[in-house]
Image 1 (spheres, helix red, strand yellow):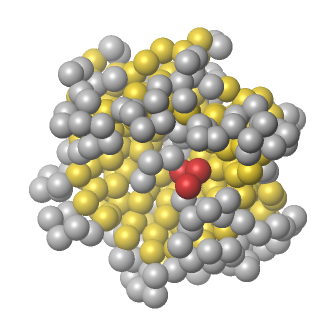
Image 2: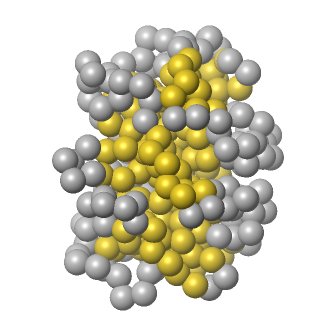
Amino acid sequence: MRSRLWMCTGLLFCLICICAASTATTGFTFTTIDVPGAACTQAFGINTEGKVVGVYNGSTTCGGTNHSFLLDKGAFTTIDVTFSGATTTAAEAINNRGEITGGWEGGSGSSCPPPGACGFLRDNAGNFSSFQFPGACAVNGAPGISNPDQIVGSYTFTCSGTNHGYLLSGGSFSTIDFPSSQSDEAFGINDAGDIVGVYGMSGAYVEDHGYLFSAGTFSTIDFPGATQTRAETINDPGSIAGFYIDTGGVTHGFMLDKGTFTTIDPPGATFTVVYKINNRGQMVGTYVDSTGQTHGFLATP
């Protein structure tokens, strides 16, 4: 799972109702998020008000050109970027101001031509702005935004090269790399500026461990017994969530709260990823059911 830009594709809609089913397990109530008519729905971001952003498409493989949505009070709205030549949009995060970040790609002649990718910010008035790490081939989206408008993500200088994490703050970029690592991505940031992500020590795109970067210090986050851990999100109280891969190769969501790990799997899921946790402890993500269908979900404590 590199950039979320390549995880979903498209179908057009305006305002429609949420298709949902709720069940309770492991202390959470799970609500499925499916865009009616879409073969693939993935939920990537949630703010404290419960507004959700993500992507959807008409392909069961979740590949190709995707469209983005905002889910607010049970109604979906399309929020694709308005840049000339844009071919795909992935909304990944929303803060409490209603500002949305993510990634986009464009065709030849656009301001973000292939083979690269760019980040975007949509302000709460609906205006889009695009950004790119200076000199980079691609910004792999913008999966984290805080209420002070600090944005995190990853970039690569050569399109087949190593990933680096970035922080965009006050219009200036800085690199966020775990010491001595070979590949890094930053995924989440809270209002205190704590950042979570993933790193690897053995080569480009080999990212085995989650990390927390807080007050200038890195610490590793590994789910006990897992072969791979990715820390995707952190809220203001300090709860961290993401996913891990067990020794059997199965992917599960997790939450780390006050030093305790909890597995987060919707009932019947064969694959689960948690992408965001808000300050109320609600989480959103993606799961695959026993038929191979991909859905978004909301987990509420």
